Length: 210
Image 1 (cartoon, helix red, strand yellow):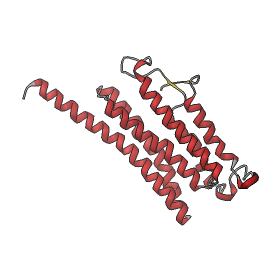
Image 2: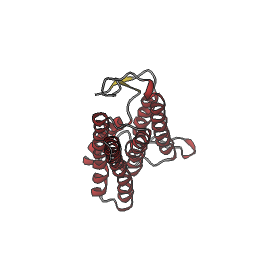
Image 3: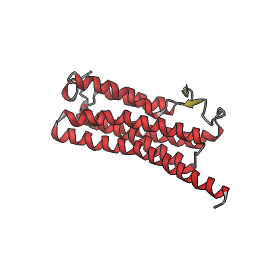
Image 4: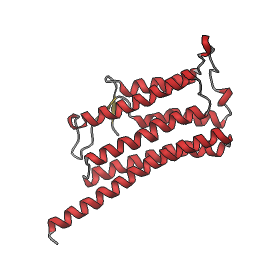
């Protein structure tokens, strides 16, 4: 086997390893979704805690696969797309399903959560389309994010965890429920998800990448 063939083989193995780490992120998000549903069915808070814990675990895999890509310089289009899909599940869909599970279930609540997920989709798609033109350092790391990165949704989930620990979920959500005509009720707390969605797609907010 030639030296070039050996190098190509090593690069393929490295790419597979990085993609497995990325898929672990997506697996955490998917598991979190199912655990949130289990909580809705059983009202067993153990399922809710596991759901909430899997989201930051997914972020750890997300950070790790990024460091591996820059360290080994194994970034690829496939890896980039996998990363975005995994992030959407772990930091977009999973938080929205968890919010639904802990009480934000009215029609208007659902609309806000769908908008939140849609903003996450738009933010990730824009990043993939523009990442090549963003300024980077020698390792290939971009200098800043345009709009808040989708993993920042875990800030809201940390608040949800605090509320769950103190019994402020379901019928006891902060702000209660606002009754509107024609049964269009909603929980003011859900507006945090709407605000987070807006900051994700903002073109004026620039967050330095750590």
